[in-house]
Amino acid sequence: MHTYKVLKYTMREGCPISTSMRLIRVGDKILSRDKITAKIDEILTLRASGLSQIDVAKILNVDRPFVSRLESLGEIAKGGKLALVGFPIGNKVELEKMAFEEGVEFVYILTDKERWSMVSNTDGAMLVNDLLELLQNLKNFDTIILLASNLRSQYAENIIGKQVISLEIGKSPIKDDVEVDEERVRKIIKEIRQKEGEKK
Image (spheres, rainbow, N blue to C red):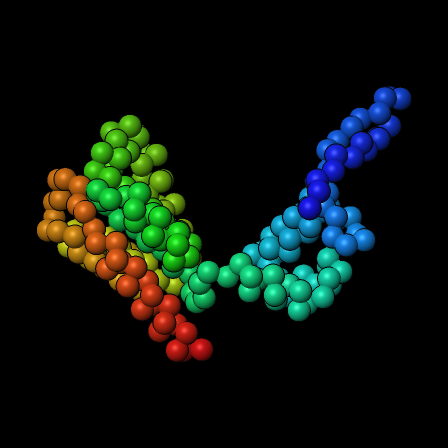
């Protein structure tokens, strides 16, 4: 496989401009990686906006089966939109990595230091706005896994009004970071996905 650098000329005030294109040869064809990547980005952006596979295929002049296969290649999870929220969490990085592996769409995890830093460095009005924005965002998800104290879990269930799965990490108030068993959370995520699959 060879990569070529092609000089592309565009007339601008009489001067040629060179741009680099990533090309590869496959048999007797020369393909542009950039062109392929751009088309894939267009397809995924339109699908994420809510358009059907048929609509996207018509707009971009591609076959609908191609759109379907493309999604199958990149699929890491199937089912409703899932969010993971937790604080104060000691093993934040590990939980975020696990959530990414399991295809969780929204992750909002804070350590104890981050939690208090947010409170102390944000004025009252801005803090309220941030919390309202978070709550509004969470309402767009089908299931929310909440890692928090017993009181915070009750508040969230009452306010969000959606399916909140609470994993109590301690009695309120929690004053230090809590290490959460990431495999236990992973198991909950898998069980949610499995139940969603059984409903279809």
